[in-house]
Image (cartoon, rainbow, N blue to C red; front, side, top):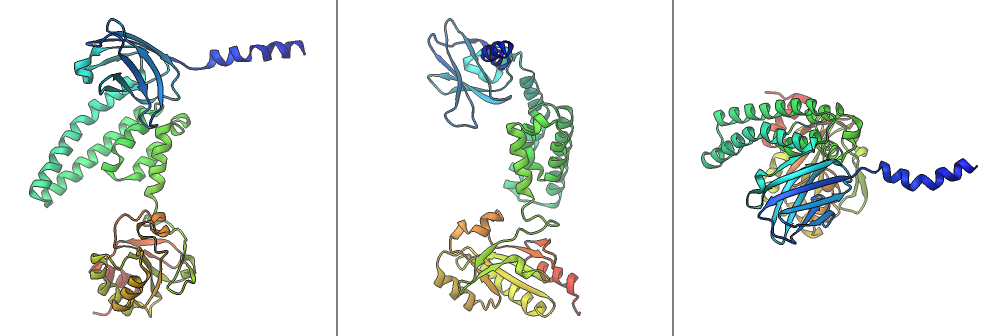
Length: 360
């Protein structure tokens, strides 16, 4: 029992000894005396991790980082700041306040990897920016599209290699968080993330990328459609799952949407042609005015089931499916799996002909 009391007495000391801390010894030319230097978490507004007061161009900052990630080191007063990938280690910092882009940080393996990341991808993004400028000026054509696809493929391959080489560092998911929107291939991102260590997967950036991967699967062709319930024009609740056993086109539209109203005759033609072949349509409206919604249904002769909660862009089904523009649609098979997406005009007719056959 006496030994137990001794251990309890020493617990605060043991916990303190195990806590990971950092120290930054900085020497910054041009840093005025009594300037305040603060370390801020850019992903948590107002979260100051540590601060220090300068003297003779130097400062000493100590504290504890919640995790290894990107932080902003700001020099106050003024707007001068530098982005640094920091570890809970002893580090030294040197540079010139007039040119913080050339600041040197020693003692942080993660920041070394951050600099390596910049070296690897900067040439690709210079090419990407130049190509984007050309497309904006001249418009897209076959050769520019081929160049774009080649460049995106090279960025993706570079990302896979970088992640594999740094699978045990938080810089790996940070890299994917930076370039995932460019490559637009979340299957590659997911495979790479799954190969990282559990600690990295559970890091801030690991969780962020995992969420992006999950979002990318919403409405993806080949995956089950998410079920939902919403009231029809009479107020009766309708579920997507109630259409199981049929091919159903879930069509997101609104009475105020010009492109939607222009597309409606094509959808009507498809409905009339295939309604007898186990095909139907479920319209989900982003209207916020019931009378205009019902009038548009009648005027455009949309004789299928319609639902809406009249919440405009905050329509709960649209939010669930991450709808950010309309018209959009999803073609769902009798088992509830998405087999087509954003099928319009002739493309919708061709897809339905593949499924049901069409006479010449």
